[in-house]
Length: 382
Image 1 (cartoon, rainbow, N blue to C red):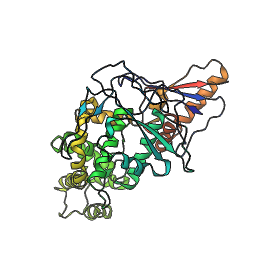
Image 2: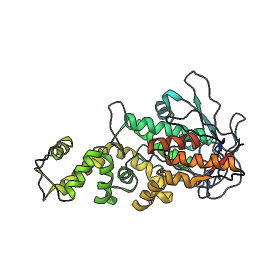
Image 3: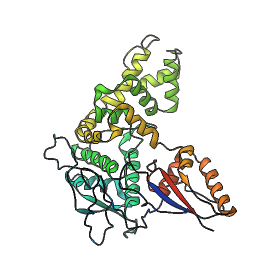
Image 4: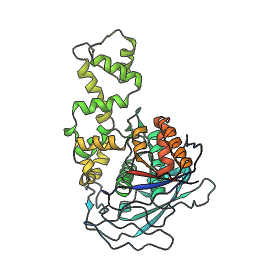
């Protein structure tokens, strides 16, 4: 299977089409992390430019880089002070290109080091990957940008966050304010450049950072908490809130003690205690990180998915992978029986994938482990 990434419109509202070549016959897919992702067509480049609306003037690019897609993209202004709010400057235009080299074996640390620069988002970034053997990989463009962002957040959730399905950043002694602010810049860059957003990041925590604690409802906190805890703990929460609380139940006692509950629980106050524990884990524990992120992430409110809680939850739902959604993305025009059989086999293969393998399939074909396009164009070769 081969893939290409750049049949995309620079306009964020235009459907993004990613062609994928499928040879007929039995088709297999990845079950682990993908290899290098490249853009075969030199028509797009990484990173956002800025403009007040549709803009036709192309950005000048050094000969070593690909041409930047023109159109209504955005870049924040320079941060003057640590306590100032990063804002989106819709009038800034023609940002210069900056090459960034990232080691495949050290993606997270390399990106954090680069994004400590407060002016990094004022550049069109040309991300390149250095392979484990020290050679510069040939891939370049939006596909590589997606892959690097995906690898960054996968590493982040492994080493700097806690939780089951939804995760919350966790403080570490070797991560200070400038480190957390660099991570926030990576988050901003990922969305304004490729519409990539890490869906494993707790939706309640994101809402806390962007919209403020006053916008958090008990329902949102509870939903995020159920995805934050393990599957067994989620069953305990559901049982307690459905009126089946038993103080002598070992699973219930383990749940309350693991989250350091200091109240004597009973059938009358268990719901209140669960909401308090949810607030403790999602709001109180990462409060320092939320303080580092909040003034910076507010710049995302210029985009529709970040204006309200409902918009934020809708974005999470739309970008979450499922076999049904991926099948709807596949677009092909088989011209004979062999091509139809090959396409049918691909669809059967997609239906058989679990969530993890399905994300790996998308990462292999698009560079991203979430849904960021409206169509996957499949080319069948005889």
